[in-house]
Image (cartoon, rainbow, N blue to C red; front, side):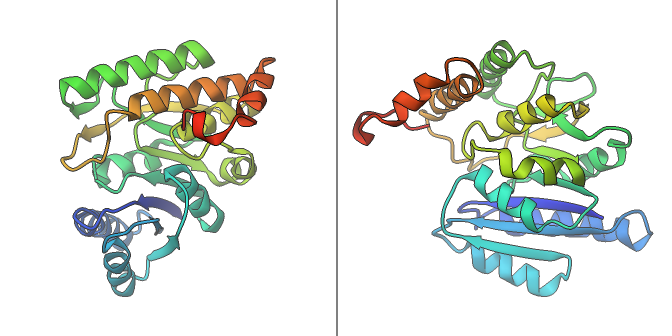
Length: 252
């Protein structure tokens, strides 16, 4: 079975279309015996009508389960989904459908002898439609991550990843960064444990309505720098920072 976790924060305008597309695609695959699957849609502190749309689809499709959370960021939502996932392969994907269902299914099909497969927009064979500004920001962030962690991965932030069940069960309790550095934290732990993770070409298209403010690139950079310090001899810097008054902290 494949478990797909879908974190959703204020996605009332997009979650319906996403679930329509994904249930249609995977139901067809299931009908011919190619796959068994479940969707775990995690409503992540939404203040709009997201949860009611999720409930409607969960009522109509037995493969859809959902969680309704009050707190946390995307990473927190994904981790809560990990805890209840039942698949031999467990993955997560963004609710805006930047990754179409065919591209996600391709990750599942190709995981084979690897412990995890992550979608990459930077590999030959990928089909991407991105604005120039996002392209430059992504390039800069990838350079920062690879410099800090010596990763071989060219794209840590693409919102489509799959892992074998044993990887998720071993790592879930150890992932501490639940906001901007969540994906990097997860991949760092995979490397530390010696799991075989491979990048895979994907299909990706930036979607209108993405809620990314001008502060996000700085927050992401601060988060991965903090993560690198936590896993270094200089972790005392983070401990000292955590003791600072809340009002003068730079929130990551």
